[in-house]
Every structure is written in structure tokens, then in C-alpha cells.
Image (cartoon, rainbow, N blue to C red):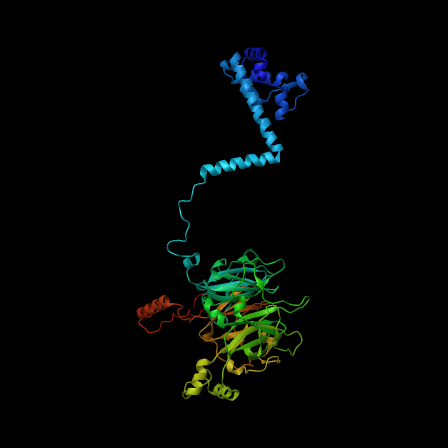
Length: 532
């Protein structure tokens, strides 16, 4: 519009230039009178005129000069100039209309509604395709392979799962291998073996419980740290996971189970498992501690009818009592009742175990312990039917100490006592062994995995350990280094029965190929770090 309003001068500047670059520079340097285009400049507010109304001037931009130089000759006719003026007026009218819409909220919503209605009238046709479950009825979980996993949790709240096959067995007293990459101030706090399809309950220091399936946990190699639990669970600021409890895969069996809680100060509580069957994604309260209390949750275990509870302390004491001595609580916030008293100052409960309650009397147990098959020599006469029945039901207690020492003793040596007592000796020579870090049931067919505060790990077969007395000092299990201590221990079941018919058929086929009747997969052999 500037060019056609000053057509003669523009044409003269272009014709008087030796090349397009000089013409461009002349057009850019010229200050043009605003004239009749002042109203349009004020409307768009893109460039402020140097003076009001017709007295002002206007300098062209490089883009505008390029457009002038690209003008075709027919645009310079009277009709062409009228078309340019008409286009400018049309654009000005549209700009004024759009500005009026943006300035009036009611008008803006009206325009938006009209446009949406237009889209609806044009595209709102009934859905032709059907959204339905997959034709094969498979869920995401059905595609997850069943595999045994080692789940590891650190004090700083990192978690991971690693295939059990990653850790091969070593001989007792070995130096272990790197089991997890941790920071200097971090250490492994919980470790257990379970299947990818099993649910896991996470009990926090704030007394809340959360639930996840194992296959949803991040998988990592043996020497990786894992991922922060805070990225998996909606835990609050300052809240950490105090206990991890793997559950049976079949939820229909939960109704017959109880769950028992134990605290560091020796309190216990028993609840029906039904209280924790339905856990929302943001968790629910499982136990409340009084504000300012130093007590904390140290163990949560499942109970079956007739079971006994075994509490072990860090100073080498233990107590066994019937789970029925603890009444079933309906509340999920109580800390329960007294389970054990402490003889020494600074002692605390460090481990909770569940034993199958036996009907044998103390005299019958003493008689059996004199002729137990693990104690008698090869020339000993066969056991009587009564003693053979006790041998078939016998459980063993494995105790591990911080300095790498431990022992395995018969569960019959832990006599049942009343709830609330001071207990009996669990392991001797705490000065050499260091405080107890774990005490739980195990068999000689199992394997043991130990991890230190320097993130070293060893896996040993318990068949290398002999059964010794309850109040003995134990033997070396892990040759820990200077200022290194065992912080966690887990039992690994290497003779687990097939979980379903398909696994049983596969096991039978493997046994036939080996030419034997054994349908249980062989355990990994012991050895040093070089496989010897």
C-alpha cells in the first residue's frame, strides 16, 4: 500500500538504481509519509508511526521491500491498486473482528462452541469397531515367565530382582562375590527368593503396607543398585521400607492364614490375613507406633493353625511360644502384647521365625535328641517308629552372626515357653561372633545367601554344615574382611516341588533322560570362585 500510494517515486528510485541491491537500500532508507495507511498501522499495532495521523512517517522493513521489488507490473495499474487496497481493508476487518472476540469472553466462548458443534456435526458418527479384551483372553501377567528371583532391598530404599540362576554356589568359608553395587553408607537390609508371579507386601517405617507383584519390580544384574522404591510406591517424604513379606500366589489360600508382627522392643501382634487382602494403590495402615517411640517393626510372617513363634535377639537369646498365646487382633494400628523381655540393656529382637508346633513332650524331645540321625554314627540301630516320625517333622534353626559365624541346631532344642519370658541361649560366644543378624528355619538341602555391609555376597550349601547344639558358638560361614560385617541372610530352597502339572511332567521327562527316578533338579555344586 505504501508503494502504490507513492508509485511515481518508487518507480523512479528503482529505475535510477544500477542493481537490485542499491534499489533495496534506497527503499529501506527512505522515510515514507503515512498518509491513508495510518489507520491500518494503528489497528494492527505491529509498528508504531513516528507521528500521529497523516503527519507521521513510516520506514519499510526488509520483508516489505522484497515484496515491493517482487510486484508484477499489472499490480501497478489502477485496478491493481484498488485490489491491493481491498485486500488491506479485508485484512483490517478480519483483524478487528478477531480482536473483538479476544476482548469479549462471552463472544469467545460462543465462537468456540459454534466451532465444536460444527466439528461434532461433521465427524460424530457411531463407532463401527468394538473395543473388547483380546480374543485369547491373555493378560499382561500371563506373558510373564515363571522364574525364581532374588529380591534385594537396601537401607537407602533401592530395590531390584535378579534371577536366582545368576548366583552359583560356593564352598563354606569362601570370600563371596559382588552381589549389589551400593554407596559406602548404604547396605542390603532385606533379601528373599520368590517367584515372578508372587505378590509382595512392603511394610514401611510409618506403619503402612503396600503391595506389588514381583514381576513389576525392576530387574537388574547382580552388581547393580536397582531403582529407588520411591519411584515404585507412593511412600511419603522420610518414609522407608522396614519389612518385605512375600506371599503365596494363590489368594484363595490366604483366608486360612494369620500374619504375626514383631517389634524391636519385643512386642508381637497377630491378625487375620484377610485384613491385608485388599490394599489400595496408595497403601493402608498396618501398625501405629507412639510418637517419639524408638520401637520399630522388625518382622512380619505368615501363620498357619498350630504354629509357634520364635523370637531371636541380637545378644544371642531366643524364645519360642505358641502363636495362640497371642490373641487375634482386629485392629491394624495396635503394637500388640509383650512377646519377650530382655536380660541385658541394649538388647533387641532382630529376627522373627515361625515353627510348626509339635505335640511331643519335653521328655520325648530329650529322648529323640540322644538318638537323632544327624547325631548318631553309621552303626547306630534304626530309629523307632515314634522317633522316625519326629525325625520326619524335625526343623532346624540356622543362626548367623555379624562376624561371619553361624550354626544350625535342631528345633527340638528350643523348648516351648510362655509368652513374655527372657528366653534361652540361641548362640554362644557373642564376643567372637558379633551380634546376631538373622535366625530362621532351614534344612541341610537348602542353600544360604549372605551379604555384607560392603555389598559382598556368598551362596553356600547347608549340606556342608553339621548340626550342633543350641548353645554352641558355631563355625565360620563367611570369611569377612576387616571392618566388614554380615548384614543380611536368606535361605534358598533348592528342592522345591513342581508348582503345577506342566512342571511336574517336565521334571519327570528330565529324570527319564538321566536314567533315574529322581524328579527333583540337582542342586548347584559347591566350589570356590574359580569353580573348583
